[in-house]
Image (cartoon, rainbow, N blue to C red):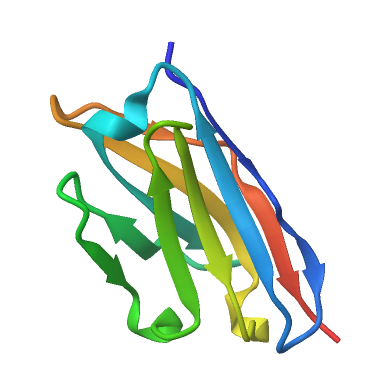
Length: 116
């Protein structure tokens, strides 16, 4: 059974940085489109950044220039480097993968809080 496990969340001040990491079982990342999503309190889950199976990255406008998504297929990890964090970046961040056969997988989420 495929499992995605996020880590790296926490509390940081505005302007700070965090690096989220997602570890996957069964080598799922090498055959999936992957991404990070987030859900703020009272809001719907939204896409933050994605990497297609071919390696094309896309970012939400709100994080462009501040966040960087990266995938390491040999280690089956997906990272999100977040710099210059803002209070509006607060939320639960989820790792996501969609395999080439259309199956979708989610991690359990990791809390990111930006506050002074």
